[in-house]
Image (cartoon, rainbow, N blue to C red; front, side, top):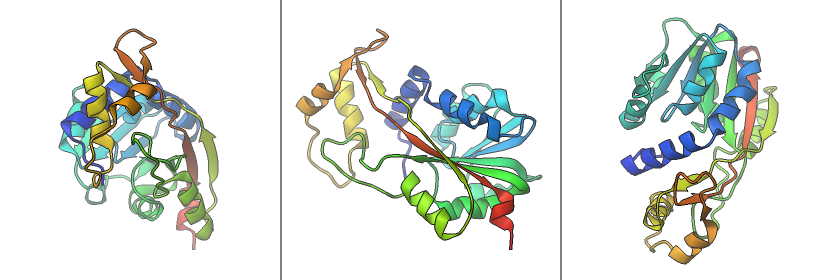
Length: 237
């Protein structure tokens, strides 16, 4: 499970507010969201997708187990209803019109939560990483877990129909100094890797910030696979 440390939250905040990554996702999934509906952003993290969905829907409830992440969302003073806790224990009074799982949980978990908390004619939207190699490490590490490839295979095995769109997006990291860049890679490297990060490797990946707001920018594609699943296909006998 990913842990939202203060450094991780700060880096995420900077990246989300520098790029339009979540705005692009929200615009893409907007046609699949009921205009006046109540949407759940499950495992919302710092809530940037929740905020980006607001113009397209009636209401958004954002839920995450991290108090730090939800505190960052609440600082925005937005209409998003932000809750801290285990989503399985926070069922809504009235089922959601749609539930969005963005980089959160596995296929079975999403389907189970959908059955418990989403309307029978609602929708599940699963947003998955569409890459296998870890992005912020200094050597190649392949991780298929919770990827678009894995999700596609699991839905096919369950004979659950879906639509899948692959969306190429950019979400790099702005960095104020080389020292911060080293700290960034140290934050996201493998937990069982005790070796110090390679500063020369990091330096080779950085470019001057094209916006001039930071010293450096770490370009990075963060392509996603977006699955839209009808709850009627999940709950049918």
